[in-house]
Length: 98
Length: 371
Image (tube, rainbow over all chains, first blue to last red; front, side, top):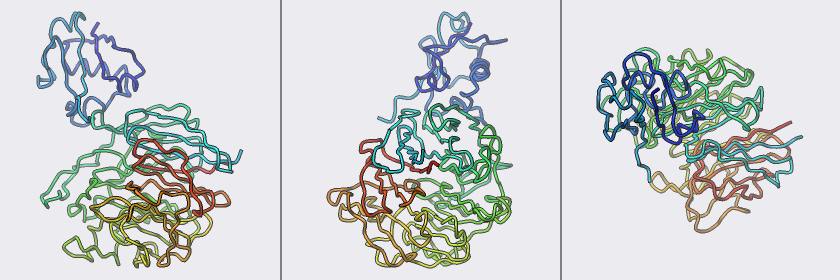
């Protein structure tokens, strides 16, 4: 089971708690995790990745296991700890706007 | 119960203000979508409890929310706004070409007759329509495709399509306005368009009388006379008596003819309201006095309405979508400020009082008159 932690505004939008648990078929990558997330919570489509380009939105970053994975290929395998579910995949909103 | 529902979009959420027909005691609901920019929300004239809201964020992009119970509960609907075909290029501020890129929805205009049909004006400027209650959106691409699109440039706030007027007497006719391209009219329900800017004069562009390129801030129409249009341009207040074919200036004795909002009295089609703003570099009322100006003669002859409005040290702005009227007798007039006040007048502007004083900056105000 993959664990995903969303920023507060997206938790409100998706009506979920502090983390989401997902079944991800096949290789566990940014793309497959986000595909599974958007399938379960279609209201999140377009809020993390651009609808058309599927690019990560500029003010969001992806972290896991203490690493910034934002600039990794969306098809690169995620760390084993994320695959095992011992570490979450974090979607982080930039601390900006203050 | 006869009453009024005021829909307020702000920088940090939406608020719904309700009152009975006296318009003295108000119930304030909100913030809905706390922390998000709500550029606009508006109810369906055909089904008043159906509301649509444009919810945006620099972090998370665009969402559209829909309520079927007058704003008590909301659900996100479709948020995919994809330009038809190859998006093409417009001009950037420096005159270089720039690809069309969707940024946000500025204005939602529900159909006058079908609660599932809504028009959306977006940045970068284009017009979209849903006919399934917001689930899917399709561009009416004839607007960008009529030929002048590559010469359009953004205004300071972005290249936005901010005004959509539906002709109540002719469902084929739609007017839109774009900053800074100008006004456009369709006679075939949005399939094809023509610019309608003859008579506008803008000194800040290379050809002051150009067919397109004018920074139109807002259009208004009285539903009984859809051929008569009123316009607050960047500078100049204008009117057209022939559906936009030609315009003449009606700024008259206004202290400044810069501004954003303009609206028409619900029962007197020659009574119009503006809020003069000092200039394009000083977005606040002249002399620190918040004054609505009313013309009962369709323009040129204006009177200042000040009773109940701050007449010293007031430096707020009133944005283009932040003024509306109700259709009670007497006509109510409402506007919101960037300082977070929503002012109401239950007597057509003679007296004003704040409904709320301390909301986030107000982006839009719409009013529903409830039977």
